[in-house]
Amino acid sequence: MLRFWMSALLLVTVSVAARAHFVFIVPVDGKQQGQVVFSDSLEPDSADLLKKIAHTRFVARVGDKTVKLTPKNEGKYLSLEVPARSPTWVSGVCRYGVVSKGKTPFLLMYYCKAVVGVKAGDRLPPAPDVDLGLRLNVVPVLGGRGGPIARILWEGKPLKDVEVTLTIPGKKDHVKTISDAAGAIKLPAPEKAGMYAILAGFSEASKGNDGDKSYSVVRHYSSCVFPVALGIGAARSARAADKPAENPEATKLLADARAARANWDGFPGFSANVEVNVDGKVSRGKVKVSAKGKVDLELDGDQKGWAKGMLSSLVGHRLDDATTLTTPCAFADDVTDHPLGRSIRVLNDEFHSSYRIRDRQVIEVNRRMGDVRFTITVIENRLTADKKYLPRTYVVNNWDVKTGALRTSVTHHNTWTRVGKFDLPDSVMVVTALEGKQMTRSIRLTDYRLLK
Image (cartoon, rainbow, N blue to C red):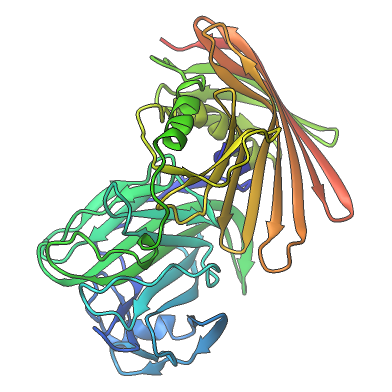
């Protein structure tokens, strides 16, 4: 259900060009130092190119404080000294400016991240609870049972279908991959010790001005670099230790609930007419959904991004068949008669995920991402003709981790219609409560046609 909570942005995957230049923070092995390069690899390029990113803002997470770092220009790279005694995450944000190549001028944003103070083969420190200013964030998860992965996050939320380029020690060529529905990619093992680099990129349809130059697209690129040793795929995470033991009963509760969800098996895609209503302002258009879940939306007005994101989430959940996954879990407590069901905790999970499960249904989802903690509470599910469950009404509450203050409360109400053997989205109503105001948005689909 997480993707229903995605930010109302039009996110389009962009190709990471082989010869393009990006910002990387390259750790100095074992030292509290990093070297910032602007290059098509982890090696420095010319000093003239480095001048174009000299204004990048760098910070480090030292203890519970975010410390600003002042880089020193060393000619072909910027040197960062980190005032810490233990392994530390460092990040940078660079608003490069407007680029006029091609027909559409675009604003270029670079984000970079690395861990310093770690030698190849050491365990990486936990990812910081704050994102250090990275709207597009790459989070390595190296201690899970399924092998090392990385998650691609946009403002703390998983981002799927993002092209990611890997620089793997010992491999001559870059390896390209695509993030899955959970924003995850697998990290292949290195062939020698060295620096492992992950680079993700996508475009956002957004108009604005940078000085006297205008743009209609923002291209975001985010890198993450850390040292690895030969033969371990990637260093184990420090969070892998001190975990409770798996409880087979808790693991089965989640597996059974996943198996009871409605999914589209053999989905051919569909087309429909669309009506979007935002506090009484109505826009109309057409939508076409491919067999693989790609949503093409034609819609007038400024709500196209939100509507496309919502429809993509609806479709993605029905195509996201997690019934074959076995996720190790443990019971969070001994309470067996809670009205929302038994509480279970997911092991080896960087999002601190927990669930409440009742009658083979996930009734509550709890996660923490960056400085936000959120809970999805299901009020009502619908049982389909296939005896599977579809979400009908649920509430998403978001809290500030530091203060505990409620940021937003968002209520979703969905209806579904049977077309052939598929339950397709019929309507969506989303009521968002913010400080001092409330917003109501809805989507209505009509005239369905299954694609051949």
